[in-house]
Image 1 (cartoon, helix red, strand yellow):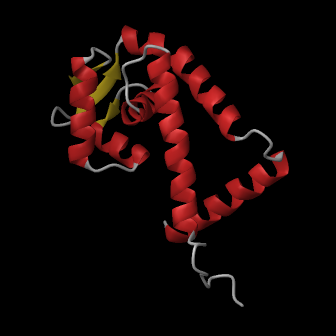
Image 2 (cartoon, one colour; image 1 turned 60 degrees about the horizontal axis):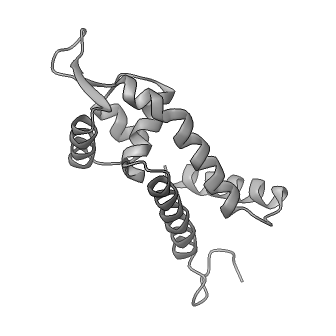
Length: 146
């Protein structure tokens, strides 16, 4: 049977989605237990800003795979929490750059530690070679559909 035929109960997107949702829920729980009042979606935006500060809203859309209304809402909430500021670009004043505040920078190490601990919980008893195979396969699927 070709490898692109599905059997009942073996839909890869469902299996992948279940695992992704379980990891996100556990990370959210771990944030909450640590007294952090940020959502996984907000953390994803902060994560990309920690990698490169002062990105445009459009660039955050691209990097987080979210639409403009979703990113706008996330940034609005991050601003209310005093974790980011919008700053007009010097090159093009029509563009808002989203920049980290000091309070957001202070969250970086703690949240990354919690994220790593969550992944350690998720990957207990999973062979490192299997992890590499899954990463390679999922990257190939993504590249095929890009």
